[in-house]
Image (cartoon, rainbow, N blue to C red; front, side):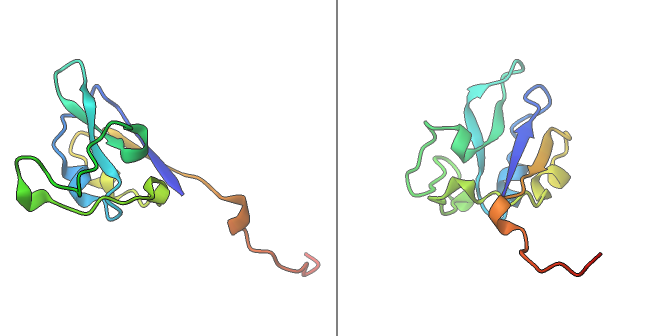
Amino acid sequence: MGRIEVDEDRCKGCEICVSACPKKVITLANRYNRLGYRTATLREHEPHASASAGKHPFLPWRDHPLHEDVAECNGCGICARMCPDVAITVFKHRIEGDRQQGGSDGK
């Protein structure tokens, strides 16, 4: 499981990360930064985001399905690598149940 943090002072809302995200869990926030741009955010952090079948209001070629499970960010880091403003930091979280349970090999 992963999450992102966006440096709102650096983000210009170019939506490259939104397009690059393989899980489609990044969207633009409904708030503006100090420069007047809408910044990127995970859908789970934006409760008022429009969930109307993933339709982009002005650019229909950007339509994509919205995921019901917003915790699907896997921390792959593609959004951070694609960000031209280096505004995204990706964190991966270990889930306790995902550890391999194995026997002791004596080492």
